[in-house]
Length: 95
Image (tube, rainbow, N blue to C red; front, side):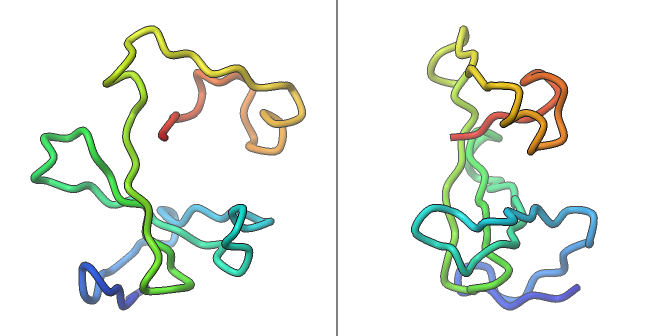
């Protein structure tokens, strides 16, 4: 699919790369579909989570392990199940 964004202009997004938050994000409930884009000039540390529902909305992401190598989030079984994960290690953690 082709999506217009404020920061990156038009981008092509493969359907399998779309991340859907069924309940939206806190404070941004109408924006449910996002794609994560690499920011090449960041040395691989930063990514951009671009809304596919609002071309103006995006969030900078970073792997918390960049700042703290021993970072290990806790997640209860209900949260893991909602994400379709059996354990935290099956997912990707970004802040």
